[in-house]
Length: 130
Length: 427
Image (tube, rainbow over all chains, first blue to last red; front, top):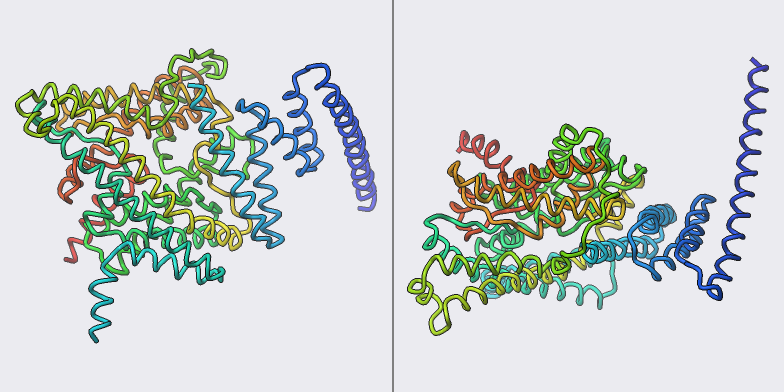
């Protein structure tokens, strides 16, 4: 059925287009937040929210290293339990999987250690809340 | 010949040395540099000896407590502590080597089962595996296994739990985390599912715990060891008062008998602290290596992580679950003796971690009301199961203590109720 095949092709290119537009939109947002972050220090605005937004946006466009960087900075500043913690565990696991595929033993241990440390921090934060 | 005799009778009978040799062989197999092999083996030996020292401190404190409790209340008072069970099994029952080898066997069976079955879980919580190895070894040897068969049966049962527990928890864990990539590796899972079941029935249409504002008045419980002391100190002192000055002074010598009770309670906490430091040293070398190998052999594995992995999803539920579970354990403490079971004192370490995690499970399926009712039921449940093991522990020579983590208790009961009778048929 060549007719259907053509339709499928059209659909595929449509979703590709949509993906592209979405990615552009997200990249634009990232730039916005980066500007906000630069101004935040001088204006005394809450940086945590901006850092978390950047982490989450980078996670969405699958730039895992940048996502980890911003989430780690957020936790460094403020140890409140929330999305930064839950996303970081997922991110560490994704990076650990990549390292396993690449057969990079040291990297595997690094990300396992990072998730261990994060759980230790979680325990401490929970105790602080009670 | 004399040298071989010396090695067999004087060196290999020392568990700390044989455990160091197991670590030595393991590190050599990983082709580590020689310096690391030596330091790793030494640290493992050190870890075992620190664990033993902690165990002796705990046993000393528990012996005293057992004496004043039976004098004061005319019955047995049992302190639930998987650490104490592990310490006594390794030290006083001479099962250290078997436990260490079963620990490795559980790892290996976990990898085999994850590789060849649908349950692709790799259990990454080393401490929990050690507790499981302790229970399968203790009850496996009581059922009549020894030598290599004890290690293989224990490894198989433990390995099964290592994949089955994350698997049965996964539907709810998926609901909590929104992902299927990460699993829960904590041997209290049967309790979580029991709690979630009650919560589902009790908590229809009730709101989430995360909308509650909790008062921060429980700050003193923020430290694990402090919260253990918070329960142990009053318990020991009140028990000493009931036992009376005359009996108490026989044990305390020149020290005032109530002050002595206070110091003994603190000793218990010190013992747990020391023992757990030893466990950390002991596992520091073995666990990372295993994780690397397991995740390589099973590339599509889901890592089963310790319970704090879920805490950030519902921090309020952790607090609420801890409190309601503690209420349940206190109720069970008074109710179980009516049914001819031992009096089990609340174990604060378990209440915090198992209760907190159960809180997240209960909140996910039944909200606030679910956490309240399910939590009390959970506390009762995790006290009842260990109570069933008390007579067996007493027969085996354990002192005033029982296991805590319900999955390990389930493994113990499986041996005691099913395997042991079958073995007796062939005996």
